[in-house]
Structures are given as structure tokens and as C-alpha cells.
Length: 330
Image (cartoon, rainbow, N blue to C red; front, top):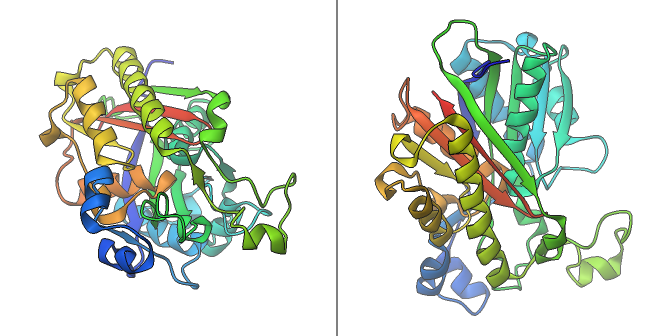
């Protein structure tokens, strides 16, 4: 099939009200606002309370999507959720979301690709549309990273926040040319130990010892992750642009994974896209992993940064290592 045959219709997001600032971290660990901002660009991040489960945050985002797309839950025939922090291991986050939404006509399942998860989900959903398996697919990224963050580790605790973002994928039938023009997915599992959680799975089941040692929390080799991220984001940009027959100058807006301002700047420079065409909200949310790009996408749609016909490039990297990109015409 010739692209585009699937497009995004409607966006939504949910972020908790509670804000954890750099000043708060100055009282928690040995760090400073200046140190955090210089190395990450982060000023604050949102933290979910006990009632703001992943399923609830995703539900709120999806309700906004359906309203924007003028659809009801009965129209939804598939739900694909990207998350690394599901509320529980069984059943999937998507099943709990389906139940909250009351989307009884929808198949639902999770995709695990860390911070690249939302773009992996877009690719999966596009394939389902092409195979005529579904026509209204909710694609969701949601994370509660605060639940797996070690707040005694000053190198990682400053980075992560919570939230959810979503969109609706539908077939293209109007000949407008809007929709997904290209996508690219890549993995290098040999880099898995650079960014990981060792405890909580079947190999190292939950235990008091694991909790006390923070074995269930995120561990990261920051310097090595930075180097690999810059290379993988550049690789992802190159492939998405080439497959879409585009060059950086033709991109109206780059929405990168919001992990670190220096990685974002390096990615934009490599792609030949000036920073005034790059959307950045890492200063306000920190790294929300799979929720990062859909939260930013919704902000761009609602504040007018994306208009009909715009060329948009989405690019991400994450633990695994995974990386991905999607080029689309809005």
C-alpha cells in the first residue's frame, strides 16, 4: 500500500497537579537548581498521587481525544498502550484502561519499548489499519515513573515525571495527503544494562530485600546513555526523513522525546532543523518516557504550533536500547 493510509485525528493529555521543583530537590538530595538545569534543562516535573493511576491518567487523555475527534467509546475498536510502569503486571495497562473507558468493542494490549513506546505503538496501529483490523485506534503513552524512581539517587531522581498523552488513528480516505509518511524502528539489546530496572520481574521477584535496596527502581549510566541517545536519535531522524523523501528544511516542527535539552539540541542540529522549529517542554515535565511525545503533541495541536498540512517529525529513544521515528503530514 502507498502511504499515507493512516492518520492521527484528535489529541489529549493528562498531567498531575502536583509539581516537584528543582528547589524541592535541593532539600532532598545534594544538588542545585543550576546543576539540574545545566545538565538536563528541567525546572519541574509532575508527580501523580495515590489516586492518579496510570489507567486513570490514560482515561482522561483518551476522553479528550474522543471529544476532539467527535467519536464515542463505542467507535473505538482497538487500544494500544505504551508504558514501562503499568499499574500491575497482569492484566495489561490497556485492559484496565479499556474497562475504565467502557470501550467494550475494543481489543486492548500493551507495547513495551520504554521511551520509544509511543512511536512503536503508532507503527503497530498503522499496521492494524493497513490490515483492515481496526478503524478507530486509541494510541496511548502513559507513565508513573515516580513509583520506580529512587529519590535517594541524585543522578536519576531529578529526571522523571508522570503523565499521559493519546491520539486516535484512523484510515485515510479523503485523498488529502495527510497522515503517516514514514516510520522507523530500531533496537540494540546489547545496551540494555545502560538503563534498566533489575527487580520486580520473574527473575528477581518482589521481596522486602529488593524494596529496601531500591532494586525495583530505575538505574542509569548517565554518560553512556547520553552518547548512545545522541547517536540513535540522529539515526532515527535520518531514516524517517529519507523514507519520506524529505530533508530537514522541509520539516515544520520537530517533536523529540523530552529527556534532556542537550540531546534535543544535538538531534535538531544533526537534522538541520533550527530550534525555533523544535518543541520543548522538558523544562515543565521532565522525562515522562512513553508519555513524552503524545503530551507534547497535544500541546502543539491545542496551542496552534501544528496546523493542517504541516510536516511533523517525531523521534525518540529509550531503554532497551530502542529508538524510533515517524514523519507525518498533519
